Length: 108
Image (cartoon, rainbow, N blue to C red; front, top):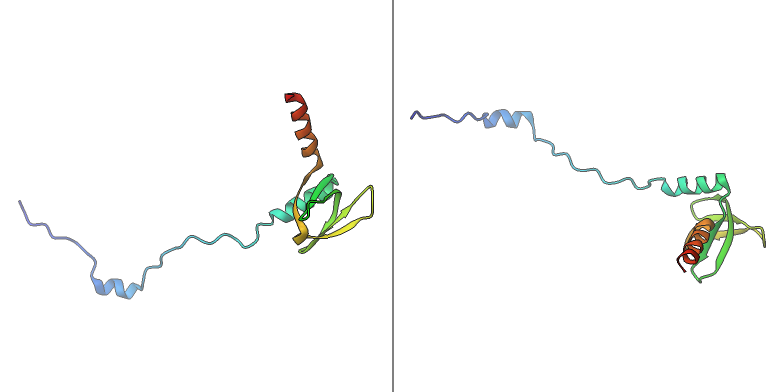
């Protein structure tokens, strides 16, 4: 058996190079533009939408435009509406409601 010498860099050499930087995982972006993409897609195709307000009222129409705080809903029946986003509980495509009703009648 022979004595082995451990080969290590000299500590003074490491100090000259400076501290090693540790890469951290970047935080996700503040805005993903998913909302913008969704609104633009629905506006372009004039998709019939159902907007449910916080009080449970359902409004039907299509989205004409939107901004940071509101959407404009065009309707066949009744006046067009400017709806603040903070008053919206949720919204969905009208065809999804029809699809759900077809599934219920088919399963009955």
